[in-house]
Length: 346
Picture 1 (cartoon, helix red, strand yellow):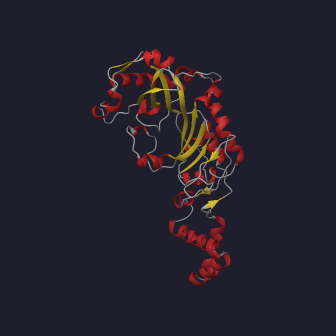
Picture 2 (tube, helix red, strand yellow):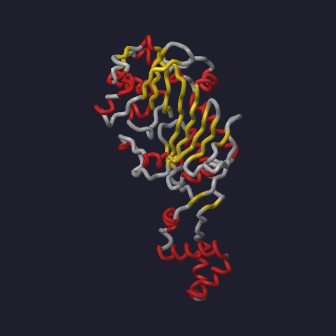
Picture 3 (cartoon, rainbow, N blue to C red):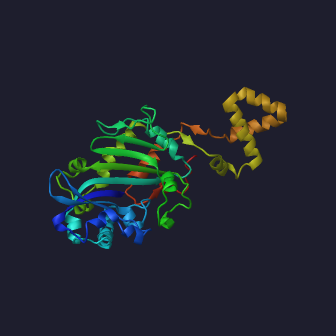
């Protein structure tokens, strides 16, 4: 739920063994499979020098950001961050990091395993919805048109950003460590990632104060519900219906106890021909191929066990996504949302 943080710590509260270490980063050679934060010395708006620390809370705690860190586990992640800073020969008290740091950037995220529902369909339709906040706009693609890319839907503002993208694709492109904790057997599952990126002024509006520390972040009451209300609920209100995608495997799973595979393939062929050429043409073709008597049996079976369209606008998946994203659970699949005896495509 809480992913990337950008925090500033005054240099007078920090002791560095060597400034050169920050650019050379020798710890990456010594611990190549460990995740370490990005650290820089910066001077922000003519103020005193500060240490800028950019880190992903779940990567610090778990080694990947598929598993999620919520407010109750944030302190545990910051304690591990504090130890890693010592490995990097950056010394400060835990109290300084926890209570004296100032957050300048924050990402609130949610991963949803959508099972057999392809992420690209959700992204395609999210990219057609209005932006969730005033003065936000959909990022233009390479062709300069106001439409979402196939792998993401990104809404940009000056102080905040809302992005939906295919997390499984990112995991294939950039593998992460410790994926044995990933609850799906394969990384080629469909994973929708909902990500809200907030700059300091957006955080100030949410928290109602000028300076926000990691301690404040962990103790802000109802933080996730505020983010959902402000950045996710507008999408729910704008569009309730997404098209359903039914794979051949999912269709067969629904009716395999009633139909043999050969009959199913025959019905699927009829459905495809009906879709492309029309019902009359498909019926005449089957009559020529199998005879009128056999075609009558096929049509009776087809009426009793209709094959769903590959894309059908009747199924409402938005409510399921709303439950999955709005639920403050550390990890939630679409299967968790459905009742045990309820099939998503019935």
